[in-house]
Structures are given as structure tokens and as C-alpha cells.
Length: 291
Image (tube, rainbow, N blue to C red; front, side, top):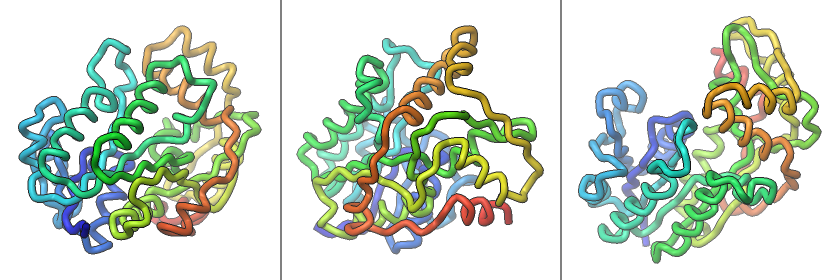
């Protein structure tokens, strides 16, 4: 079935914005379901329709999704939350999928992560929520696509820059195939256009493999928007520091432990063939966002 209009939940985030823009550029009508319409208007292109909705409110989801053939889910677990707290990728995804099914959505796509396949994280509740969320999408009764990306280049520019320093983890060894949000957005758009992507799970990987230290150095050499100094620390040191800090730091260290320690073979060929072959490198990304 043809998808012309796509509802997005999570459009205003670091990874939601490039996907929303690429869907518009690909000719789709896009509706963003947001909690704060005024904030969303400042962040998203004028072509995107904005509708107030909340994952905790099933009625608002049904109204927001009505008339859309596609649904894209970019959900996150709050970094300061506990297992007993309500979570977007656990309870929230149930509400979103129920609303999508009720409104007759033809295709649902979900942003997951390769860390859901990391056996080292199997006992962590966040890991379990991510595995369960992907399974819920696959068992929803709606044609689906699940994306499992490697490291995003946006992490370098949005999360690792602090007080004139580019923060990095040293000595990890394992390489990750870094992908830009724009290239990923093109893949999402292609998945909604192409029925071959339905009922498939893809590893989303970029054209280059770097460990976190190497990636940070390449970014630093090509980024000119501001002067930065590299500050690298081994993961073991961050683990010790996290014992004496808040839950947000502990969450980030857990995620980075999976990202940096989990072996990442290249399995992105299926996504490249079916969807879009990514071309943006860390160097070209750093130069683009420096303008």
C-alpha cells in the first residue's frame, strides 16, 4: 500500500530532525506529534504539520495519527529514569502501536539500536526494553521496518562538545561504522517508498569504521565552527566516576560500554542495497556543520 503522509513521534530530537527534513525532501507529507507546538515550530521546517499529542494520552495519539498511512517512531528512555518509571520505549510504544492499528496505518518504522543485540547488556532493564520494543513493532500486525544504527555522527557535535572540549573515550579498540543523521533520514524515506523494506530489520552503518578516539580526532581536524581541544579518558575511569555521580552519567556509561565493547561486524549491505548507500564521512560531516 502506498504511503503518502507520515506521522512522526520524536521529530524534535537530535535524530528526529534530520529524518523529518529528509522525509519532506523526499516528497512525503509529514505530521509531527509533539507535546510543545511552539518549541517544535522553532525546530522544524514550516512544511511540517504540527499536532499536539502525548504518548501517555492514547486519545491524542489516535487523533494525531488519523489520516496518516505511515508512522515513524523515534523514542527514548529518559536517562535519569528508573526501571519502575513510565518509559516511552516500553509503555509509550504500546500506546503508539495501538493507535496506529486503530487508525489503519500501513507501515510503521522504528529507530532501535545495534546495542539491543549486545549480550553484555542482557541483564540491564534499558536493554530489555529496547529488545521488547522491537519485538512489539514486529508483532503489531502492521507492516514494519526496524532500524538498528551504529554510532551517529551527531553524537560528536551534539553530545561530546562541552566547555571548549571534545570529550572522547580512549583505548576502546572496537570500530563502529559511523552514520550521519542525513544519510539515515534518506534510508528512512526509502523504506517508506519501497515495499521491499517491509517486515525487515536493518543494521544501519556508514561508510567508515573508526573507534571513538579515531572518530573524535577526524572530527576535530575538520571542524572549524569553534576551537576545540580533545579530552580523552578510558572507559574504566568513567565507570569509576559514574559510581559517584547521578543516574544520567551512569546511563551514558552503560550505553558507551555496549557501543565501544560490542564487536561490530559490517552488516549494513542489505540497507545499502534496499534503501540508500550512505556517502557522508565524519570529515565531510564536520565540514558541513561548520558552515
